[in-house]
Every structure is written in C-alpha cells, then in structure tokens.
Length: 410
Image 1 (cartoon, rainbow, N blue to C red):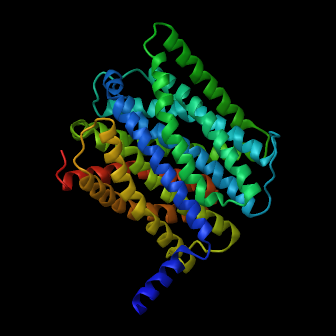
Image 2 (image 1 turned 30 degrees about the vertical axis):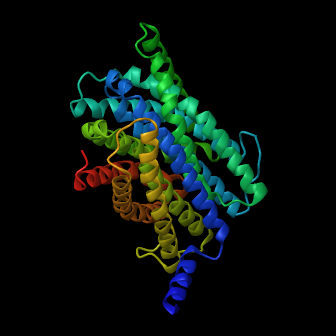
Image 3 (image 1 turned 90 degrees about the horizontal axis):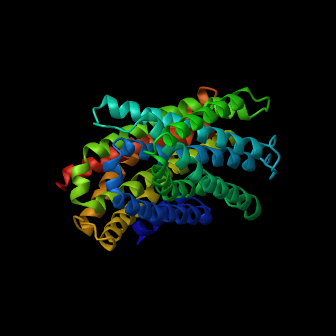
C-alpha cells in the first residue's frame, strides 16, 4: 500500500497540481485521434485517386502537416501574449491578432506552392513514374490549402476567444485541436482540388494565376511596414520549407511500402492518427516549454531542468492511452468500412510500439528545438511546432513501418 501511495503521489507530481490542464490536454488528444481516424478512413477510400495521379501521395503528409505548422505556431504566439497579459481581441489589421491572421493567409498561399514544387522534385528524383505536372500539384495544393485553412483559421480564432473568455490554456489545446482540424479537412479539400486537374487550358491557366498570386502575397508580406507581419513571414519560411521536405519524405516512405497498406487497408486508417498524435503531443510540449521560457519559469539549458523534465514526463504519460486508442480505433474504423485488418491486438501493439519509439525522438526534438530557437535569437513559438510536426511525419511513418516489419504484418 505504501508503494502504491508513493506511485500515485509521484504520478500526481508529474501531472502537476492543475487537473484541468490534464483534462484539457487529454480531451483534445482524444478528439484529435478520433477525427484523425475519420481522415484515415477517407484516405483508405481514395486509393484510386492516388493511382490516377502519381506523386500526389508524396504531397499528402506535407499538406496535412502544413495546416498544423502554420496555425499551431499561430496559436503558440497568441498563447504567449495571453500569458504575458499583452493580448487584445481586435480585428484591426495592425493589431497582434490581425497581423497573425494576415501572416497565416500569406504563408498558406506561398507554402502551398512550395509544397507542390517539393513534391514534384522529390517524386521525380526518386523515380516515381508518370508524376503529374507541377502546375497540377500547385492547383491541388493551393485550392485545397485555401479551403482547409479558412475553417482552421476560424477554429483557431475561436480557441483564442475562448482562452480569453473562459481561461483555457492554449498551450494544452492548440496543437492537438489544430492538428485535428488539419487532418480532417485537408484530405477532403485536396480531393476537391483534384477535380480541377486535367482540364485542357483551364488547369495550366489556373495554376499559373495561383502561383502568381501566391508570389505577390509573399512579397507584400515581406515588404510590409507593420511591426510583426514581415518578421513572422520571414522567420516562418525557412522552417516551413524544411518541414515540407521532411514531410514529403514521409510520403515517399508510405508510397514505397504501399503493398502492406494495400493488403491491410486498416493500417492506412492508422497513419493519420499515428502521425497527428505524435505531432500533437510534441506540440503540447513545445508550447508549454516556449511559454515557460518566455516567462522565465524554466532556463534553456542543455540538460533539462527539473521543471522541463516534469513537462517531458507529463507528455510521455499522455502518450500511452492515446496510442492504444489509435490502434484499436483504426481496427474498428477499418472493419466498419470493410477494410482488412491484421487484428485488434496486432493493431494496438503496432501503434504503441511505433508510437513510443517515435516519442523518444519527439521529446528530444521538442525540447532542443525550442532551446536552439531561443539561443538562435528567433521566436520559439514560430519554430517549435513546425520542427516537431515535420520531423514527426517522417519519424512517425518510419517507426510505424518499422513496427509493421518487426511484427511481420504484410
């Protein structure tokens, strides 16, 4: 009994004195997993589209991740201003909120074009035959990005308003909920964009116009006289571009291992949830660390201090039920849709093994990515989530495939 009491006390110490924060994080993560499984079900149902449009699957993880990267960082910056007492709800373009909204719109346009170029380049370099043109990819990426981002922006603004009105901690909810919206909206939005591909004259003309508009918006953002907008755009571009390359590499991994997913499509249902949960958990950690560094609560040291170690343990403990839920949920959703599955136990084991291996990397990336951002003189709110999310796309895909191979699935 004494050992049990000590274990419970230790667990409470890790989770912290605020049970509301634990509930907020856990509810957000479960919602994130649930909607990601819905996205996975959709992904498993449009395999014919990927067969008809070679190269599109390479762009999918990067396109999904872009929404979380842009709006997760948006939420991070707003969270920090709320914690520091400098945030004001205002629709004026020159306000902190207004400049963040403008930056999100500009980055959505510009990075959608960049992702099209990245996906085309990687697909051709790695020998994927008959890939669709860069303008085709640009049309799908930009149209899909705009459609998904409008809703994700509205949700992010709603979270910011709720944080001010009801005292929510955005550090605990932004990353999982933004990832949720990105997962569930990006795939259908990209699918809608595919209907504009292959139309004689219209597709290349529309692609050229969208590329031109994106370039103009980027130039306007970089040359703006506002105090925050050009800095956000300038600091975001390099990390979002790097994130696009890394996430596209995850798409290559999925493309190369497509035979296993074709044999057991329930595994494809698991993919968005697996990647999104890892990214959301890392995003929670990056958000908490960033806010605490800004407030001076923890020191950015090479070896995590006691406060930072508590946050690392907190996020790792949250991971266990989330990955178990993902594996079981993917099996059930797959069976509901008539997809073959290797079995509920095997799915749970694959999810947890792949997930925990990925989390070892995620925790290190979230901590040291935030530390390097601070020491490099850039805003960790802008860099934390993109670093984690993009890396998790590749690491999460790799560790899931590794678990599939080790367990002899497919």
